[in-house]
Amino acid sequence: MVCIVLLMSIGHALLGLLEGGPRHGYDLKRAYDERFGQDRPLHYGQVYSTLSRLLKNGLVSEAGVEAGDGPERKRYAITDAGVTDVERWLGTPEKPEPYLQNTLYAKVVLALLSGRSATEVLDTQRAAHLRAMRDLTRRKVDGDLADQLICDFALFHLEADLRWLELTAARLDALAEEVAR
Image (cartoon, rainbow, N blue to C red; front, side):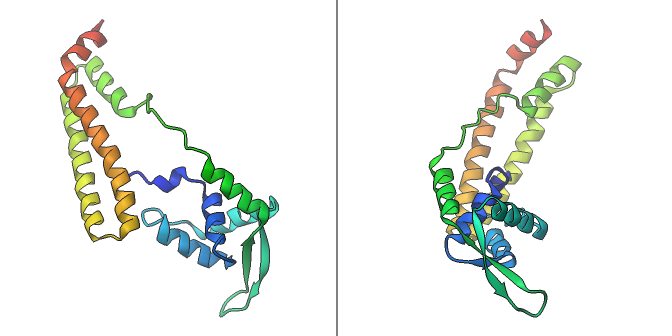
């Protein structure tokens, strides 16, 4: 599954989580991982380096220190500038990605150019997509609403890829002629 959060700004996600109230880094990491990072949790270093950058840029402030069993934990709070930044980020549409430079397309063309089977390339990819879709469907059935929505997002993209695979397979002879020129 493509991890959607990779495309998301970690800084904005942490700022958004801080809108619920001040938190320390460990708590932010846990909240992030529960909401967005099930497939790719954040590293602690990533959380603290991001918080440091947000602090430097005036988007968060230190809101006290908690004593605990281990080292003291700094609590961070979102500033007015941080709230404005989150609002701006939420209001900015993501750029639709047309995927015009697709690795799979390159593999099909290179298979045709080299005399290898482009059909095998497409069949292998189709099988991988179907496996991923089965896994996501199982995860969706057992998941909560957030998991269902993220799985639907990934499934819809995989379905679009499958349609492309079928269309390309149907046009393979014409593509082979065009590539041979």
